Amino acid sequence: MIRKMGIDWHLRLRMAERAYSTPQAGAAAGRARHRPVSRAGFRLVTQPPQRLSMDTLAALCDILDCQPGDLIEVKKVSRPSARPPGPAPPPPPRRRCGAPRSADRAV
Image 1 (tube, rainbow, N blue to C red):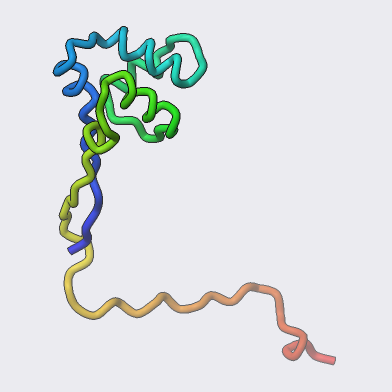
Image 2: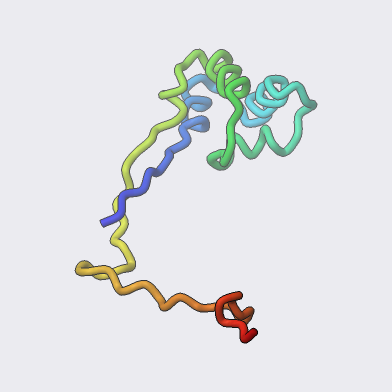
């Protein structure tokens, strides 16, 4: 069985606990990134981020008065492997390129 790590993003939950709206958090995230408010701030609230800078995470924690562990939860996700248990199949045969080796050339 292959174990993968999953991430739960709890920004929306923490915002609801502190009565923050999506535009307020989006504006705060935009300020943390030193940019005007954009779709990126809205996306932070509505879906888990693929990448998150430390500055943005620190700003969100400061605004919401929480710790990074309150926003991000890492958990183990077990998925069965696609390969059946047992010995591994043999590797495919090596392919030779079409160029002859110097020892194979006729003089």
